[in-house]
Image 1 (tube, rainbow, N blue to C red):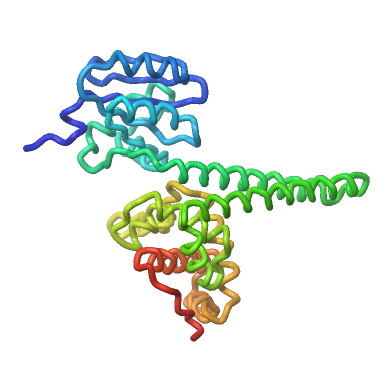
Image 2: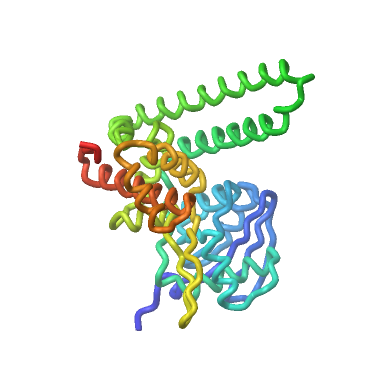
Length: 315
């Protein structure tokens, strides 16, 4: 039997934190800790011998520098999302969670599942810039919403808060302008505008979905839905059938924007009947909004995949 890429290479598992990296060498059964700095990472990579495969849990941003440098050094890098690692942990009955245990678990995961995994390839600079802008905007929206809720009933600070709120809204508008300029520079605004013709899909949702589409190579709508973390995980054993839940992998901001798009779409002529039909079948409002969000994502994927123009469902 031919060995997988991971099996034919020396395997490392790397647990990433803001300030340090815990690295497990499976062959030597050895753990080391190094600073999460460019200098330390380069020194460690330089000392590696032979072909090396590295499994890293994808964190918010702290894994990015290590992944880039390891890829440049010729290592095969595998990013493991937290969802997959969490369920693997349960599957192999590892109950404790420490940095050292996670580094070992990542190496074990790559060794055993490497044949089904694809090595990571760094995204284009455009993709990272766009993702950074979306992160900044999401943080702004979260902060504004939180402040609005906590300060709403404080009359003594009403005037001061109103001024602060206006400043935050101007900053949000600036970030959206920068997103638009970046899309125009990349030649993607035509795709964004085509997606915005779908009822319920606004500029930010369209931009986020175009960004997601540009990142991967998808075999079909199901793969795109899975990339967004909107595929369902079914819990079923024998005669017992549990509730299906979203996997929620990769992109929480895309899911949030799609949820908002679904809330808007359900009131349109194009999607109102679909929403009401599913509600009549006994699904809750939240469940139908998730179903509608998936439908919207599928429509957008088809437009991007085929380069076609949207034909309204109301026509």
